[in-house]
Structure formats: structure tokens, C-alpha cells
Image (cartoon, rainbow, N blue to C red; front, side):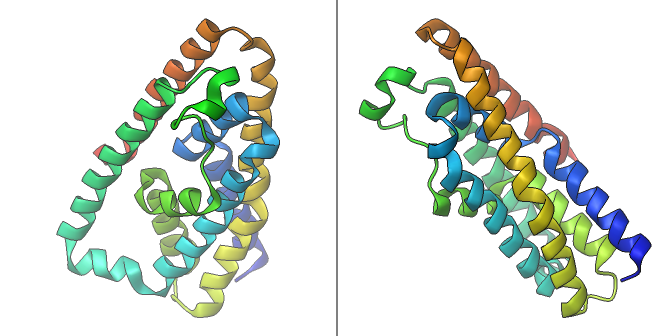
Length: 199
């Protein structure tokens, strides 16, 4: 991989990781509802889970979709249904003071966040594009380079969204404000998946 290609890969990793999408909107919501520290497992699950996804896609999973397009169609439908479920949970989340007493008032765990990458439309778009464009000869070395590039860039990017959510928490000191914020985040979460699902 040339120096220019590596710089382009890092730029792609940054732009795709920092822009709004299901992961970042959920991390901002978690930061606002539960604080930065309680959101750390969620952040690590996103970062490490996406790296694992890149490796698997780069090692040949994308060829399965080429050969069996129906599998990808089923995955898109499952992704949409699960994101709608998450959006509902966000919209109906308990107020900050009652979060510990409510079954929906818990941040995602590391494993939940890592598993979420497999039904995240933006994560699929990012991984398929990254492998197709930057691991052109499909060698293990190039796949590892793409994965490491995202590993370096992704975690700081997603962490910034959780930190932003924690700052927003300062103005969400009333249940009505939190309800409005969570509802808005749920709507944005649904909206964020539409472009990827419709392509």
C-alpha cells in the first residue's frame, strides 16, 4: 500500500467514522443518559466489533453476498427491524434519575455493541467500501492494514460522540427535556439508516 493510498484510507476512515450514523447517534444518546464512563463498554464494542467485522468481510464474506444476493437482502430487512426496535427503546428510555430502575435504562454492553455492527447498515457500507477500494488484491496484509487504520481512527471518533452526549446531559436536567432529546435521537436513528438501506 503506497503512502498516498494509506493517507486516503485514513481520510476515508475518519470521515466515515466521525459523521452521524446509528453508532454515533446511539453513543451520543448513551453519553447523555448514562455519562461517558458508563458508555465506555459501548464505545469499545463499536471500535473492536467493527475491526472484527472488517477482518471477516476482507477474508471473503463479501463474496458470499456476490454469490447469494438474497442473503444481503435478508440482512437489510433484519437491520431495519432491529434499528426500529432500538429507536423505540431510545424514545421510551427512562429519565436519568430512574434509569437504574428501568429495564430499558441501561447502556449497551461491549458484546451488544460489537454484535450490533452486524446489523448496522452504515457499518456494512463502510466495511464493504473500505475492503473493495483499499484492499484491492484481497491479500491478508492489505485487509489487516485497512483494519488497523480503522482501529486507530474509529475509537477516538466514536468517543467524541459519547463525550458530546455527556455535555448535552447538562441541559437535560428535566424529564421533559430528556424525553424530547431521546425522541429526537430515535427519529434521527431511523433517518440515518434510510440512505444506506435504499441504496
